[in-house]
Image (tube, rainbow, N blue to C red; front, side):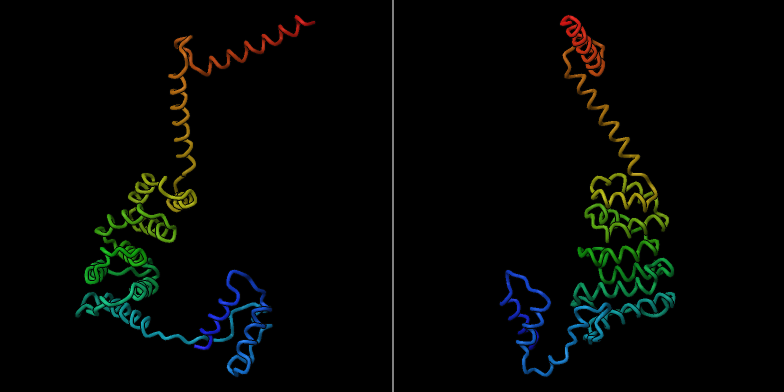
Length: 271
């Protein structure tokens, strides 16, 4: 509470401006003068020495612990080959961060689904119970899609394709394209990328092409060649047909030659 009031005072005093580290230290010491809890700050260490702060902060892990426990319960259910009853924890009132924590724990424990993928039946039951396939939250959908792809859930493929072709953040699309490519859906991944390549930022497109082992440059050159040919054809159509059957490029070359020869003759006449 006392630090919160300090933060308000600090922002009020220095808003619309900037200060040095030394000025921050001076303001801090003046504000907390007489407060024993603020004594003993090793400013030299904080300002000039490398490494993480030596102070270990303690956080309330009540919410994250509940998420991790639910994930562990589903993982145990998966290992048991579906023996027993699936977890029935109600997460309707959970925040998106709590649900994301569940999915992150499951991905971590299965090495992002690569080493020990969940069984298809587990993924389907897990997704259906919490409506994960229909969620509009990108963080949740991204993580669930990864689990489902590695479980070889082909019902998730249309959802994945729609997801990776409607927004272009690399933090989402690269892992999902990679998952498709390595899990037996490489043809779908390449086909989707080629059809939507121009939708992505050039850097994203280049990185995806590397992931999918295809050449964007080669395809670009092909497209540029077609564009040049189309432009040339349009130019020919717009050229006055003084010489039917002769391309505009040939006419241009002839004009340059004639102009050059005219210049030579003009110089000789002056002499």
